[in-house]
Length: 363
Image 1 (tube, one colour):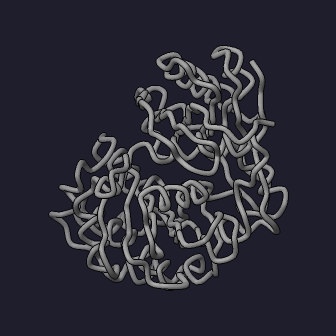
Image 2 (cartoon, helix red, strand yellow; image 1 turned 90 degrees about the vertical axis):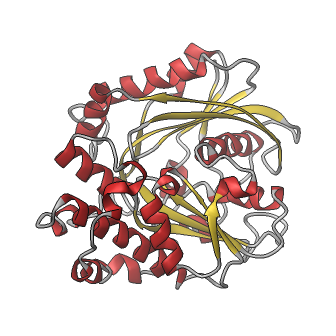
């Protein structure tokens, strides 16, 4: 177990959008952030994405999982090789299946393999302990969001809204002294985000995404679909709560619409589901900082501003890198695991008590 000292930790994240691997160095002691280091991105090829998509929803030993894990390990090993002087690595892996009330959670990729090829200790399998102790296993970035709120000097409650394949938010009260303190955090998945829009673009147009939300901006949302979508029981559940990548039936709801109208409808569904999530917050936040790929979608950002109270801006407005926050988060969490500090608590994942997840693989 490491002492309380600052280390250079490399965080790695491959999200449910299947775009590639984010890597970022963070100088941290697992409690505060001293500095942000270099970062890099390694995209998945179309062939690699196809293998990963085919393995979605599958568990260890099932067809396609071994091939997916090999792609994940190779891609991560390639990007790790670009960094020098790293003391520790936080490796999330690629989520293929997530059933916290069922079979558990499955992230493809072995930390043993990455430690062997990198020669650096690797912290991985961050979610399993939380799930085994009754938590949702997600989201895990909130403890890092707490550190960031204090790092940027926030003095009032605020929200970090992450728009990846799935949307999630963290309500932070930076006046508390630690992330697991009562009232410091509330976090949960708000609903689908980029995943259904990206999937539609892939299936209908052969594109990875609706760049900048340009096509959605030309469409009109079908509000009957949006209203029906908001009746889903998930939005009524009290947080903490989490989702798998695919929201059942959402794609089918817009199958009758043209491309632009379908994307506009999905974008409106995302914004409306985030707004629905704000009903669960203990206090209206002073500001909302948006990270993840969705902040580049101008149509989605405009819809969010129409739905949400207060100031909403990309995290870059606070001097942060919205593309690398999740990678940095797993650097931060890796250091907490190495120090024996908790990485989740009842108000972030619903786990019974504050718990530290992850296992460490030596080189």
